[in-house]
Amino acid sequence: MHRPDEQIAAGHIPADLLRHLPPGTDPHRIVIVQAPPRSYTGPILLTITLAGGVALVVLMIAITLHVASAAAVAVLSATGGVGLTLTLRKHRK
Image (cartoon, rainbow, N blue to C red; front, side, top):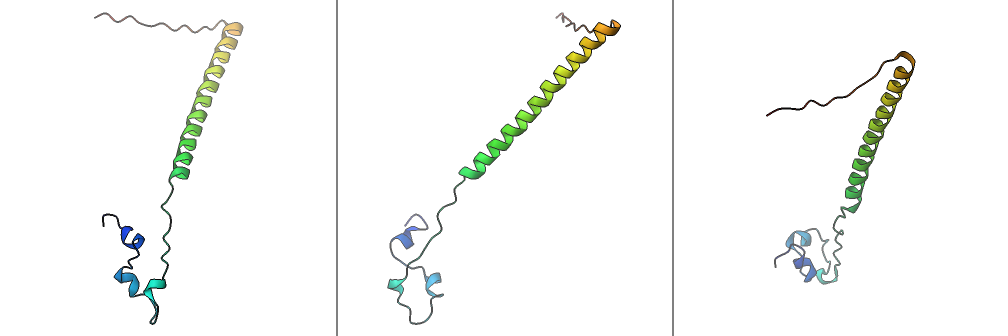
């Protein structure tokens, strides 16, 4: 027998279970009920949903800050003549 549940599936009752039977019980009439294996689908889907939700919130905060800063620069440049120029330096090798 290679798997732990093969003994019970074959109808053999392990000795540690026989010790817990009340006296006078027929071991051939015992039905052993095993709990089904645990399903990991729920926790995995919950983790994926939470990770996606956190990523979405961070993305929304980044977009909101980008739009707010662009609006602030537009208002400042229109009212007071303040401008913003981004330049990229060229690196020489």
